[in-house]
Amino acid sequence: MNKYIFGLLVIVTTALMGSSFAIGKMGLVYSSPLLLAAYRFSLAGVIMALIVRILKRAHPKTTISWIRIFIIGFFQTTGVMGCIFMSLRTITAGESSILTFLNPLLVVVLGTVFLKIKYNNIQWLGVILGFVGVFITMGGHLELRIGTLFGFVSAISWAVGTILAKTWGQQFDTWVLTAYQMLFGGLVLFGCSFLFENPALIFTFNFLFILLWLVIMSSIVQFAVWYYLLQKGDPGRTSAYLFLAPFFGVVSGWLILEERLESYIILGGLFIVGGILLVNGNFYRKRSVKDNITF
Image (cartoon, rainbow, N blue to C red; front, side, top):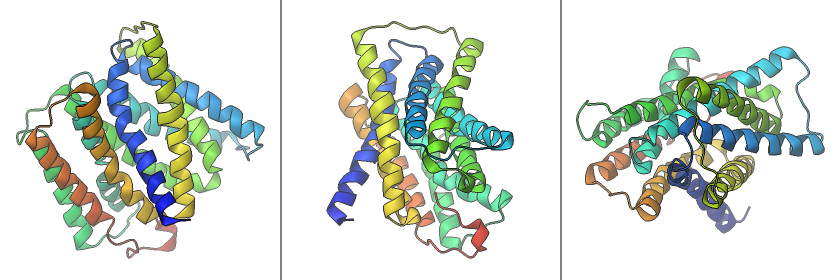
């Protein structure tokens, strides 16, 4: 692929990832957090499920396969997106995006514990640097706001979803897995909304525009472009560009929501970016072939 087209697509997909935090926070004016997340991913899942059916992509044949897709969706969509939207009630879009994209660092920790993957000292330095960045982002103290906690849990859930997708994902068509994990995760979010919040929705033209943007641009288009890039380039190197997403999250929060760019947030974000770059700096780790994992 032409490197300029590749670079443009990288900017498009990471900008959509990052700006979805600011757009999502705008949606909270009209909807309770979990209900908004439920609508976003249920609708995106339904649309993608119809597309993979029309294209006759290979679907799972066994009950255990569908259960595994459901579990991946529980962590990847319900856990990640539910916690992100909950975090946006009390922290800025920039802070939430920075905490969520701590995910690649947590993958290293979980991969070491559960998959026995071996990482070098530079990569562990990256993990430490990333966690220092989180501490700085929190203002240099340990007083946790509930939104900060939700942001951190979203990163943990994403890391778990990544490990599960790597462990089980090779048996599924990528597009089928993406469609149904979003659909199942979105449906669970509806249940969570009725259990853990007072569902509220003010349906206006502005809300419809925000919802359609989140469904089409920030979900379907974002995933389509991202998976296309993963297929065309080295997955490890391509995934390293994820550090651009929290940058766009901070910038979009500043531009769209007029959030203040606190110096400690910027500094903490730089530490996390540095940590992610160190973790992704060596793409051929000492491990067995079956444990080959990318972020």
